Length: 289
Length: 289
Image (cartoon, rainbow over all chains, first blue to last red; front, side, top):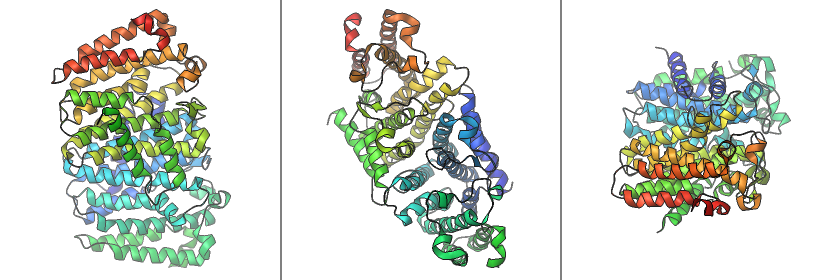
């Protein structure tokens, strides 16, 4: 089974548990709507790629780890789109959850997806219980305070923003969790994998900044110019267009170079270089060639 | 050390982790504000009482389990008070979190407290890793969908409300988690403890309905008459004042009778009867005497 099918199946299974009998049907519908149809599933694919490079020995646990990261990511999108944050009307080309289901169910769908993320890991680790603890530690560090995505979003409510901490927490945390949990799920020492996630998180941030400036709202499936209208820092503003593209290239090379020695290191290196360059908006691809 | 001190210490330790260097200070402050100063800590005390009855052998894990339940409870209060739900201005006699810190930090403090709840369990289980899986399963069932507190709150967004499921999820779920996790933390078979939590959750709901009708806002530290103004079901409305008090008495007796045989069963039975009757507003205590 290819990785993308495994990712979608694991997510469908997890969201299916939350929709079991006895629960409020509209909450289950809002959770499903938050997760499907799929986005790029970049973080999940990264988790799978690392697990494959580590010589994956427990596919059910890799599936659960990759799903948990994606559920957390979806939860953060639902909450970030709320009127009190970005007040975004669209996401992935369709109405945002709070527009489609109302604000109360958007708050609760986000909450329940955070919980489901932890529950999915616990279910996946039934046959490898000794790997549960590091996975829960990694996931909670990436999700909460002081360094996870909730903290990342909260920096926008501070009078004085710490830019490095902001970006590392808001974007880098889940990328690091993806690489570390890919290794955790195989019982490998995971810390050597953290740097790869951090660099890829930064690369993703730069690519996102480029898209925010270059793409149309239709291409993006969400509003454009959000950084400028919310006064958020943007790499294009800081480095110029060419400077930002150079930065993305350098980050991809450093990321590939950071991969620890392991069975599948060579394949993973070329995967990382290809995938990172795919993040570039197609309008700019010729400039990086 | 007495139980209340243990509870407060464990919560302070957990919230302290979230306030470590590198995070946004206002988020850490909002999280602290959400948890302190203390409420009655009923769910945490129940968790400790069950662990004591089971012959507690891992106090650090009991502390973590009791703290995790309280953190989840605090998260649900912060989110329930948001403008899109109860729009409550006060809680525990002080401004609600969204009033004191703004809506964005109230959403994020709730999110980060949910995460901290799972993280606290994982930290507490470092020396008893084989007990982590049942604890995470119990906590996630009590927190999410279809049967946890997020689902309970979401029933209020359904066109047709399932009253039994609503109350069991909104209030019963965390009480059941408190008894089950008290047993989980001692490595005991936990399912026989679920019924006790369910009955106490129902008792608490009836007592809360009585307080909503009988108490003043000053006594309660939050707005009164919330059930009527939000069109929520209330036991006093359904059973009358005496009927609701009779129901509370019966639930306390059934709860005491449901306690499985264990070393501390007798002490726990009298603890349950006393504590449940303490839930009654003082204006009504003479009626139950």
